[in-house]
Structures are given as structure tokens and as C-alpha cells.
Length: 101
Image (cartoon, rainbow, N blue to C red; front, side, top):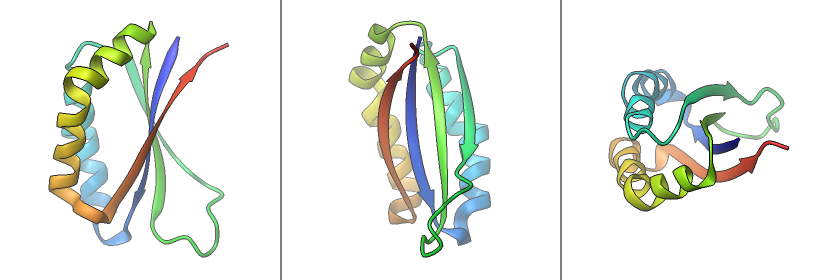
């Protein structure tokens, strides 16, 4: 099993709007690609005291690496651009790919 992880740092003024959009639109768009079987949203608890914003990890499970690669090649950039267009620099993100051992 593979986990495509997107880590987000979200500025406080737009946090509730971002979370609602993630749950009601963005995650459904990603799942709609049929490359992932499930997702979960996690909030980082032990953030640095000087950190601004809240950090979230949104994880998508794939049965094989080919599904993740197909997503990244075909839809990943499009959906990332939607996020940037909607929230700009108020939401920063980076991605990682994990393999369950």
C-alpha cells in the first residue's frame, strides 16, 4: 500500500474555509480520479511555538505506485493549481510518498 501525503500550513483567517473546501470539494475531486481508495485528514499537534498557522496532513491511500504516478501525471498539477488559485500564499504545501512496510 502507498500513501500520498500532502502537508499543508494554513493561515488562521482562512482555516475554516480551507477545511470546508478540502472536505466538500478538493478531496472528492482527488478521490474522483479513481487512483486512491481512501483518505484521512490529520492535524499536527506538536507544532513549534513560533509557527504561524495550523499544519495538516491529508493522506490518500493507493493500492499500487502506478496509481499514484498516474494521478501525478494526469491530474495532480491541475488540482494543485486549483488550490493555489483559491487560497494563494495563505496555504503552503508539500507532498511526500510513503510505502507501508
